[in-house]
Image (cartoon, rainbow, N blue to C red):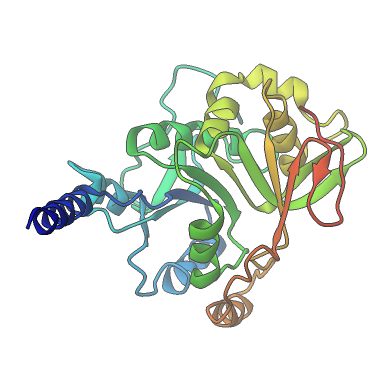
Length: 301
């Protein structure tokens, strides 16, 4: 009889433990899709919204919807990846890299889109737009518990299956996501380093904070390519200036690039929706000089 009571008691303990168990949170991400002003790019945003962003995928939502779902408690949040189009909207009198006490973003009146982030800088490609976006993204990540930040060109295509398979299988959430950076690896002989190609790269939120907030605009300018500014190469230089080791994840592209016409973009997206991730086949993980597979590039620590 005592044995029976003991078994029942143990069953109750296990049931209670199961009821108390909280599954770990899903890894969260902010994707900044780089765009600009003008009718050509407005039309491009329209067909991206109608394809990549317009599918019945509750895990992908606008920044505004992500904020709404996060309000009060994360338990009710279904969206895992927030997106925003990133546009420099400050005019010619503003710096190309946010370096003053003026507001970081602009609330435009009239002709604006509510899923765009309007940075308070002069529009540019190579001279500070990406670090300014990271400053915004790091602040947003701190407030709304975002684990990773992505910079993506508006002519890059990725399917939902590959995106979420990659996030769920390869990207650990906070607090296990420290100093992680990656994308399609490119070597630089000038910098004696490897960096992630600009069409799609990602980093943990702490690295976005390091580049956007800890480094100043003057710091970043001094680190840029000596002959001409190259956005993705310079970004790698900023990130690897971190005094602590950075884990570089070199990836065979799970996205495609470039697709600058609507017909080609939609065709590629239709193909990408059928693509699933092959575990580990797309990864080249590099700590310092060591990496998996057959690529070895020296890194700046």
